[in-house]
Image 1 (cartoon, rainbow, N blue to C red):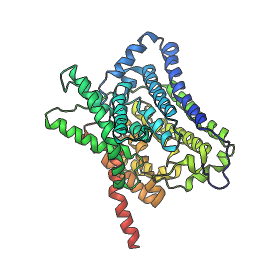
Image 2 (image 1 turned 135 degrees about the vertical axis):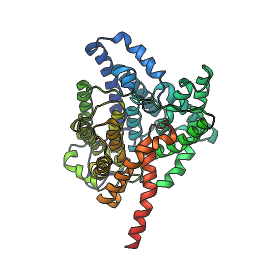
Image 3 (image 1 turned 180 degrees about the vertical axis):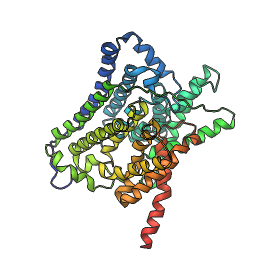
Image 4 (image 1 turned 90 degrees about the vertical axis):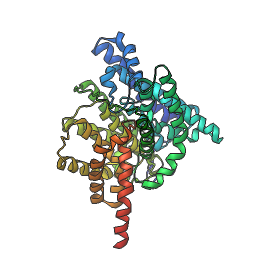
Length: 426
C-alpha cells in the first residue's frame, strides 16, 4: 500500500480489516436480538417476521422495518453481511475501498429490498459467468455484490402474481441467475458513458438492465406494481445504535492512525472520480475516520430536518459511509447536496420527507463532479439530479434499488461533456 507523503499508520493485515468489518453485522445481530427480547419482549415472532421479509415483494418502496419489524430487519442485514464477509474471506480478497463501499451498501440495502432469497440467484449467475469465461470468480465478486440492486425483480416475479405459483419462484430464480450472468460485461461498458463521474456505476447499469426487463414484462401485460411500505416511527434505540456504529469507525481510524484527526484534511485534495481508493491513497486509518465522520453528519442531517430513520434512509446513510472509502468526503459532497436542496425548495418538496432525504443522500454519487470542476458545477449537478431522480423510477418500474445511481449516471453523462466544452472554449 502506497500512502500519501508523511501519512504514517499502524501496519494492518487484510484479516484484521475483515475482523473490523465483521463487528458491524455482529452488532446488527446482537441489536436485533436485544430489541426483540428487551424492548419489545416479542422474541417468539422474530422467525415469523424474518419469513415475512424473505417472502415479500421487494419492489420500490419496500421497507423491511415496516414489513418485518426492527429485530427481523437487523437480523436480515446481519445474515447478508456475514454471507458477504464469508465470500470475501473464502476468496482471500484484499479489502480495498470499493469492496468496503460494496459491503456497506449491501448492508444498508438489506433494510430496503435485499434479502437472502433474492440476492442468492444473482450471486449464482455471477459464479456461472466466471465459469463460462474461465476466469477466477474473485474477479467478479465486487460487481455481483453491487448488482443485487436488481434483487427486487427476483422477489417480484416469485411473489408478485405475475406468473402461476409455484412456477413463478422458478422463473424468478432463473431471471436472477440471468442478471448475475450478464451484468458483469454490461457494467464495464456503462462506465464509459459517465466517464467515472458517477460513483454508483452499477446503479446506472442496473437502471438500464431494469428498464429492459420492465419493458419486456409490460409488453406481455405483466405490470409491475409499486409498493408503499415505509416505517414512520422515530426510534431512539436505532438512532443511538447507528451513532455508536459511526463512532466505532472513528475509533478504528484513530487506532490505526493516531494522527487521523490532524491529517484528515489531506483527504480533501482528492477529487473522487473513479478510481479514488482512499485505502490506497491515505490508508485505512483516515479512510475509517472519514467513513465515521460522514455517517455522523448524515444521521445528524436526518434528525435536524425532522426525517425518519427508516429502511431507505438507512440504505442512503450506509451507502454514503461505504463510499467514504472510495471517493466521497465532506468537501466534494456538500455542493451536490446543496444543489439537491435548492432544487427541492424550488420544486416545492418537503425536505423532511423520506423520498427527498434519500435523494439528498444518494445524490452524493455525483461528488466527483464537484471535486473535479468546483462548487457551482457541483450545485448544478445536484439540482439536475433532483429533477431527474423524482421522475425516473417509472422507467424501470421500481425494480432497480439504485434509482439514484441510474439518475446520477444520466446527469454525469449529460453534464460533464457540456462542462468540458465550456472549459475548452476558455
